[in-house]
Image (cartoon, rainbow, N blue to C red; front, side, top):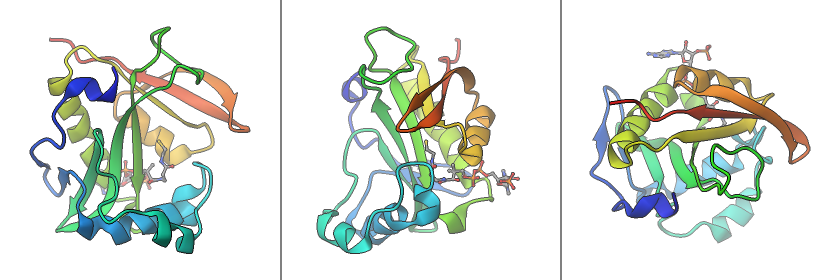
Length: 180
Ligand SMILES: CC(C)(COP(=O)(O)OP(=O)(O)OC[C@H]1O[C@@H](n2cnc3c(N)ncnc32)[C@H](O)[C@@H]1OP(=O)(O)O)[C@@H](O)C(=O)NCCC(=O)NCCS
C-alpha cells in the first residue's frame, strides 16, 4: 500500500455517535499546534516541539494529506488519526516489502479518558476496511505508552513482536483485515 492505494482524499465526513472524522481545514491550525506542543501528547513520540517553531512552520491548512483524519467534537478539533505506509527501513512488518497501512492517533489531553479515541478509531478502521478490503493495519507504539497500547488492543490489534527503536522498546501489533 502506498499513498493509501489511490483512494480519493478526503472522503466524505464520517459521523459517529459523538464525533465527525473529516479532512483538515484552516480552522484546525491552533489545535494542530496544541497537539504538537503538548508535553503529555509528546511523551512517547519524541517529545513536544517548541511552540514558536510550530507557529512558524505549521501551514495555513495543516495536515492536508491522504490518510489524515481530523477528529471533530462539536465543530472543534480534538485529535487526529493517521494511516501511513510503514517504511520498509523500520523493523516490524507483516510483508517483507513493507508499506503496510500503519495507524496513528493523537488526541488533546483534555479529550482523553472519555472514549473519544476509541470511538473515532473504530470508525476510521471501518472506513479503511471498506476502502481497502483485505488490507491489514499495523500499529507501532512504545511499550511504555500504556494508554496507546490499551486502545490498540481494544481496537483488535494483537501483539506480534517487540523491538528497540528510537532508544526505547516498541510494541508492534497487527489487526488483520476483517473477513467477509
Ligand atoms: C493514545 C490516546 C489517543 C488514548 O486516548 P484515551 O482517551 O485514553 O483512549 P480511549 O478513547 O480508548 O478512552 C479510554 C478511556 O475512556 C474511558 N471512557 C469514558 N467514557 C467512555 C465511553 N463513553 N466509551 C468508552 N470509554 C470511555 C474509558 O473507561 C477509558 O478510561 P481509562 O483511561 O481510565 O481506562 C491518547 O492517550 C493520546 O493521544 N496520547 C498521546 C499520543 C500518542 O502517544 N499516541 C500513540 C502513538 S500511535
